[in-house]
Length: 357
Ligand SMILES: *Cc1c(COP(=O)(O)O)cnc(C)c1O
View 1 (tube, rainbow, N blue to C red):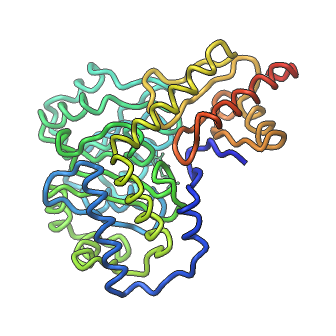
View 2 (cartoon, rainbow, N blue to C red):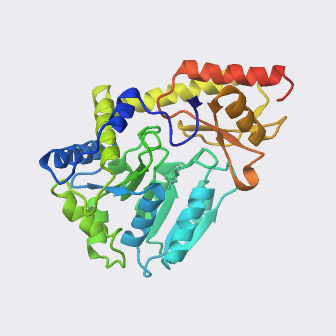
């Protein structure tokens, strides 16, 4: 099988081997050391400002999105949500659930956020902005520098879901003035699903400390306190945190976050070059290196997904809902190579030869 989905993605052999080992007991010096290394490398790779902190939540990416909405905002906030697909919609629904006053900037499928659309909300008392920097459902990568300038100008607390963009696209929390960055284990970190990660700036830490939350599991105050000694309040996904440790050190030892991003970018460009002239339209105006979203012009997108899976053992990523027949996505994150890209392109050519596409 070759896995071009957007998560869980392919893991390296070293990561998979840890999955085979016994899971150790975790209230130990050794596990605390692992966690402290994890925190340190996450702060380094996200380029977080000094005195930032990292929290590891046992739960998928959405668990951290929910925890952040609960811990960083109250009914007194006025939040702007960039809603350009199913992940933006998720932030909007979380604000509904926790009664955080919010307005959505709704974008059409594949459309980038334009400056004039954003600046309609200038000087209107917004206190927070939620954005999925890469809206994975459509492959759109938003102009985060433009969003950052807007937030700095309006003194807005900026939360960035970088779950599918972390490591794949350049990102500098400190320079951009990002208060919270969220990511997850099963995207470019290329580990199994089950852990999501929240990086909090000092400003975000003080929001968390001053907010009274009605939750036990998602109380980030207690996560911060336990994290001081490299521990978590409850039993975490110990095995995945050990895999994350190996993966972060692997990135560190092979040139750091810049080298990793470059590798993913080259894979994406290689794929995009190889499919030139094929019956596909690019869906998004502005793409992340993590994913290429394609609209096949001659056949249903879902049919391509099914045939590739069943007859070629190649997995691309289907879309759901009303995009099911229109769009499928090809990921460039995880343990993939340019040879893997060629195998996928060969399969596309075969579909053309068979008259399917
Ligand atoms: C994958 C992803 C998530 C998290 O989804 P989970 O299924 O909860 O892990 C959130 N936001 C974006 C942009 C994603 O790509």
